[in-house]
Image (cartoon, rainbow over all chains, first blue to last red; front, side, top):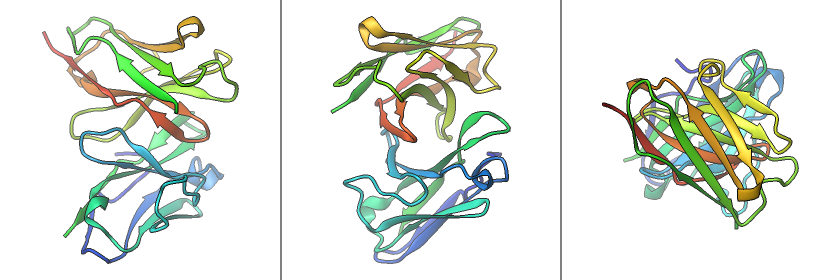
Amino acid sequence: QSVLTQPPSVSGAPGQRVTISCTGSSSNIGAGYDVQWYQQLPGTAPRILIYGNNNRPSGVPDRFSGSKSGTSASLAITGLQAEDEADYYCQSYDTSLSVWLFGGGTKLTVL
Amino acid sequence: QLQLQESGPGLVKPSETLSLTCTVSGGSISSSNYFWGWIRQPPGKGLEWIASIYYSGTTYYTPSLKSRVTISVDMSKNQFSLKLSSVTAADTSVYFCARYNNFFDYWGQGTLVTVSS
């Protein structure tokens, strides 16, 4: 059981919008620590998708967006494409545990 | 373009020490304000941060592994390393090295380490 809780899986049809939630607590997201989102394609290393809650690195399509409120964060993907099928991880820092945290990961299936 | 590459044995026997090195190219490991770290991923499972070292040499470890882990840096070779002692089958994972600059921005491709006799 990860300290940052994500749904194990989400799915959507091409063109649709999906969201992935990341629920933390008062010692991590709720304490004001930024949330990052990473995309991991099969057999590859994770790559940064969203940093600082809602910022996209150059090269990441604006179909991806992030938000944060209270002790939770969300990743939204609009205009779903087959190439978006991957595992997605949220990440933050926990001041009580003194660790960089990853969520358990969410597998996105494009139907 | 910064690149990171993990190297080390792909097979380690139970109770022995796992040793991995991450070679950084395209940039200096001594550059200020960066953390260099190790993250692992058991087969079919999620990501777990293991350890990080600041450019100044300060180290940070995940509590569950702290008694068995050492991270170090070799500025002269532009490398940083991970040692994990007394390994068991539960330590079988893909091990990634990465740079942290407010987020993990550059990653190595990962190396699978299997613990088995």
